[in-house]
Amino acid sequence: MEVKIEKITLQDLEQIKENLQQDFDDFWNYNILNKELQNENSYYIVAKDEEEQIVGFAGVQFVMDEADITNIVTKKIARNNGIATKLMEQLIRISKQKSMAKITLEVNENNQYAIKLYKKFNFKEIGQRKKYYNGKDTAIIMELKALPNL
Image (cartoon, rainbow, N blue to C red; front, side, top):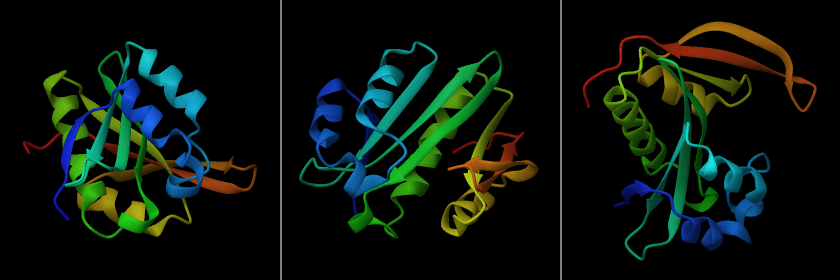
Protein backbone atom coordinates (compact mmCIF):
# COMPACT_ATOMS: atom_id res chain seq x y z
CA MET A 1 0.00 0.00 0.00
CA GLU A 2 1.38 3.39 -0.99
CA VAL A 3 1.05 5.98 1.78
CA LYS A 4 2.28 9.47 2.43
CA ILE A 5 3.26 10.65 5.89
CA GLU A 6 2.56 14.22 6.98
CA LYS A 7 2.00 16.27 10.11
CA ILE A 8 -1.49 15.79 11.50
CA THR A 9 -3.97 18.67 11.36
CA LEU A 10 -7.19 19.34 13.25
CA GLN A 11 -9.00 18.51 9.98
CA ASP A 12 -7.33 15.10 10.00
CA LEU A 13 -8.44 14.55 13.57
CA GLU A 14 -12.00 15.48 12.64
CA GLN A 15 -11.87 12.99 9.74
CA ILE A 16 -11.15 10.08 12.07
CA LYS A 17 -13.15 11.31 15.08
CA GLU A 18 -16.24 9.16 14.50
CA ASN A 19 -14.34 5.98 13.73
CA LEU A 20 -11.38 6.39 16.04
CA GLN A 21 -12.22 3.66 18.54
CA GLN A 22 -13.62 1.05 16.15
CA ASP A 23 -11.08 1.47 13.34
CA PHE A 24 -7.91 2.12 15.31
CA ASP A 25 -7.89 1.16 19.00
CA ASP A 26 -9.65 1.91 22.25
CA PHE A 27 -6.96 3.82 24.12
CA TRP A 28 -6.52 7.05 22.17
CA ASN A 29 -9.77 8.97 22.02
CA TYR A 30 -10.57 12.27 20.31
CA ASN A 31 -10.21 14.42 23.44
CA ILE A 32 -6.77 13.03 24.29
CA LEU A 33 -5.52 13.50 20.74
CA ASN A 34 -6.98 16.99 20.52
CA LYS A 35 -5.07 17.98 23.68
CA GLU A 36 -1.90 16.40 22.32
CA LEU A 37 -2.13 18.49 19.14
CA GLN A 38 -2.16 21.61 21.29
CA ASN A 39 0.88 20.50 23.31
CA GLU A 40 3.99 22.27 22.00
CA ASN A 41 6.14 19.33 23.14
CA SER A 42 4.16 16.79 21.10
CA TYR A 43 4.39 15.99 17.41
CA TYR A 44 1.81 13.86 15.59
CA ILE A 45 1.82 12.48 12.07
CA VAL A 46 -0.69 10.67 9.87
CA ALA A 47 -0.40 8.13 7.08
CA LYS A 48 -2.77 8.72 4.16
CA ASP A 49 -3.55 6.32 1.34
CA GLU A 50 -4.01 7.15 -2.35
CA GLU A 51 -7.56 8.41 -1.66
CA GLU A 52 -6.32 10.71 1.14
CA GLN A 53 -7.95 8.49 3.76
CA ILE A 54 -6.11 8.24 7.06
CA VAL A 55 -4.84 4.71 7.58
CA GLY A 56 -2.57 5.37 10.54
CA PHE A 57 -1.18 7.91 12.95
CA ALA A 58 1.62 8.22 15.45
CA GLY A 59 2.88 10.62 18.05
CA VAL A 60 5.91 11.53 20.07
CA GLN A 61 6.55 13.83 23.03
CA PHE A 62 9.83 15.65 23.54
CA VAL A 63 11.16 16.18 27.06
CA MET A 64 14.65 17.66 27.43
CA ASP A 65 16.80 15.48 25.13
CA GLU A 66 14.49 12.48 25.14
CA ALA A 67 11.66 11.51 22.79
CA ASP A 68 8.85 9.31 24.07
CA ILE A 69 6.67 7.62 21.47
CA THR A 70 3.09 7.89 22.68
CA ASN A 71 1.49 5.74 19.99
CA ILE A 72 1.75 4.17 16.58
CA VAL A 73 -1.65 3.08 15.33
CA THR A 74 -2.71 1.55 12.03
CA LYS A 75 -6.30 1.26 10.87
CA LYS A 76 -7.40 -2.33 11.47
CA ILE A 77 -8.24 -3.08 7.81
CA ALA A 78 -4.91 -1.63 6.63
CA ARG A 79 -2.59 -3.56 8.94
CA ASN A 80 0.35 -5.63 7.66
CA ASN A 81 1.08 -3.18 4.83
CA GLY A 82 4.19 -1.54 6.29
CA ILE A 83 2.35 1.56 7.52
CA ALA A 84 3.61 1.31 11.10
CA THR A 85 7.16 0.92 9.78
CA LYS A 86 6.83 4.14 7.76
CA LEU A 87 5.35 5.97 10.75
CA MET A 88 8.21 4.76 12.97
CA GLU A 89 10.81 5.83 10.42
CA GLN A 90 9.34 9.33 10.38
CA LEU A 91 9.21 9.56 14.20
CA ILE A 92 12.90 8.60 14.32
CA ARG A 93 13.75 11.20 11.65
CA ILE A 94 11.89 13.92 13.56
CA SER A 95 13.56 12.93 16.84
CA LYS A 96 16.96 13.02 15.21
CA GLN A 97 16.26 16.45 13.66
CA LYS A 98 15.40 17.71 17.15
CA SER A 99 18.71 16.31 18.46
CA MET A 100 17.12 13.83 20.84
CA ALA A 101 19.61 11.56 22.60
CA LYS A 102 17.24 8.60 22.75
CA ILE A 103 13.70 7.41 22.16
CA THR A 104 11.62 5.48 24.68
CA LEU A 105 8.19 3.83 24.56
CA GLU A 106 5.91 1.45 26.40
CA VAL A 107 4.28 -1.53 24.73
CA ASN A 108 1.79 -4.08 26.01
CA GLU A 109 3.53 -7.40 26.64
CA ASN A 110 0.76 -9.08 24.60
CA ASN A 111 1.28 -6.90 21.51
CA GLN A 112 3.78 -9.12 19.71
CA TYR A 113 3.36 -7.29 16.39
CA ALA A 114 4.43 -4.00 17.95
CA ILE A 115 7.30 -5.60 19.87
CA LYS A 116 8.55 -7.14 16.62
CA LEU A 117 8.36 -3.72 14.93
CA TYR A 118 10.33 -2.02 17.71
CA LYS A 119 12.99 -4.73 17.75
CA LYS A 120 13.34 -4.30 13.99
CA PHE A 121 14.48 -0.74 14.75
CA ASN A 122 16.85 -1.99 17.49
CA PHE A 123 14.80 -0.90 20.49
CA LYS A 124 15.94 -2.77 23.60
CA GLU A 125 13.86 -3.77 26.62
CA ILE A 126 14.99 -1.77 29.66
CA GLY A 127 12.21 -2.45 32.16
CA GLN A 128 8.59 -3.26 32.88
CA ARG A 129 5.55 -1.68 34.48
CA LYS A 130 3.31 -4.29 36.03
CA LYS A 131 -0.46 -3.91 35.58
CA TYR A 132 0.08 -0.80 33.42
CA TYR A 133 -2.60 -1.54 30.83
CA ASN A 134 -6.15 -1.80 32.15
CA GLY A 135 -4.78 -2.67 35.59
CA LYS A 136 -3.67 -6.10 34.44
CA ASP A 137 -1.27 -6.23 31.46
CA THR A 138 2.41 -5.46 31.88
CA ALA A 139 4.05 -2.69 29.86
CA ILE A 140 7.48 -3.39 28.46
CA ILE A 141 9.62 -0.26 28.46
CA MET A 142 11.87 -0.07 25.41
CA GLU A 143 14.63 2.32 24.42
CA LEU A 144 16.59 3.27 21.32
CA LYS A 145 19.83 5.03 22.19
CA ALA A 146 21.60 5.35 18.85
CA LEU A 147 19.18 7.00 16.44
CA PRO A 148 19.83 5.66 12.94
CA ASN A 149 19.99 7.73 9.79
CA LEU A 150 16.85 6.96 7.78
